[in-house]
Image 1 (cartoon, protein in one colour):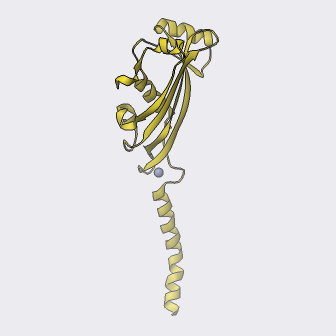
Image 2 (cartoon, rainbow, N blue to C red):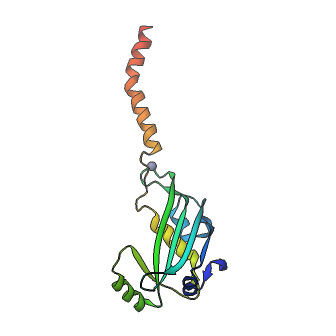
Image 3 (tube, rainbow, N blue to C red):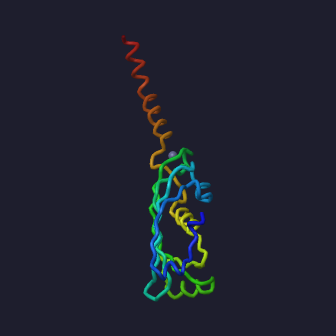
Length: 165
Ligand SMILES: [Zn+2]
């Protein structure tokens, strides 16, 4: 995990860019929310600055995960595809100040550090990208039930047909 720790302010100043992959199994808080621990997330992190000169990170996280359907409790595939702009502040007070200054709900202001944990950032991003109430559009169990219902409806005719023979 040490490969994921960087000096966030330095990273932005140098406009560095990194990308890589991280296994869902290595992100315990995310893995807890999922039906299983399979899947690998692809991430990229671009350093830079916004118009006002604040250090800015652009984080992108994509990849397939297995969610558990709240209706039928079976797993289903969900594709995480998330991108966020994060402004770095030196401390909490600075974060509040920048937040008020920018007045933009689409931009998050976070406290940066010289030992910044990118894995934690990727995990937070992935968690925020998950639906609050994951559900199949059509649950497979429900589809099976519907087939059975239809079959039952048909059965008196089948019985009749059999009697005629
Ligand atoms: Zn379902």
